Length: 433
Image 1: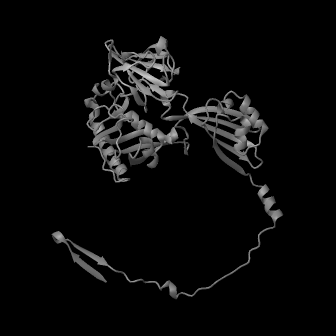
Image 2: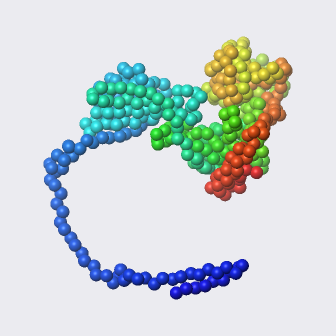
Image 3: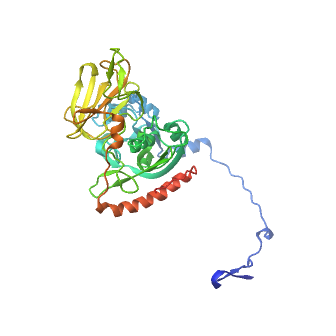
């Protein structure tokens, strides 16, 4: 049987139908066979099982309160010799040193004796924290234990997500199934243009392309298993902000808009990722002295210990105590710009240390003349106090050099396609423009 269809332009399409050459299966004879199968006795089964070299693999995440025995018990291991080695070996002790959160995998034999224990945790090198992990291996061979430590690359897979603001950013990213670490990066990427505490609007939308990280095929527990945000878009009050990660020919990475302009402004919009302004740059009634005075900075209300970050690259010019300001950090950013962070509960830097934009320099506190936990933040240009809320949005950005633009254009096209797909997850119109 054949059918001919003529289409536009004179093309013809011929469809063929082929009759079956084999008989219909429903017409074939059917025979049913049955046979009684008797398993071996229980004793025989146990004997056969005893000849097998069984092994058991279990994984867990270390806790800050773990002892060696508590960790091994959770892994289903009962091995006093292994516990003693972990306690006494210089590398073995690292399994439980520091904070919890290490991914630990144990291999034990059928009797519960530990044969190998592998701990995976963030790279001990700060420069490699985003791309590598530390693998600590304790193993038994011919009754003797050994240990070794190495650095290995994390494996990254690309994931997409998008959502709509209904109350706040973290609620929206939770609803979209995105890790909090991704939300925090969105704040960092767009902090120069959006105040995520005061300027978010119900109905704002976002889309993001990010890395999911694994170590030796296992999802990592630190940073909630997420790596770098590769591309993102945020529509705030109808204004579209876009960014993508790009590494230039010199190996320097940063976020750029689709036109090649750097998203990294000279200064962040706020020294706190999330906060509320409790006192602005203006005259105010001093809370302790009860007199009207010029307030030469901005106060941010936040819980004690909240991370305080440097708003720009620079060098620590002071780290210590200053009368009513309590614990203070001052940063010299260049010949003209400097910032001050006061009332800190702790200081995480020292004088002369170089810091990068976004690096934690201390924690919110109530030291000095403070009625409650908050950060007092000052911005000076040529020694004169300026309104910090205005400075960040008026500082310049940087652009790609001519040598990088062709490669950037190719990556931007790929980002457009990924962002369009991410937006389609929630019918959000998106894509680099």
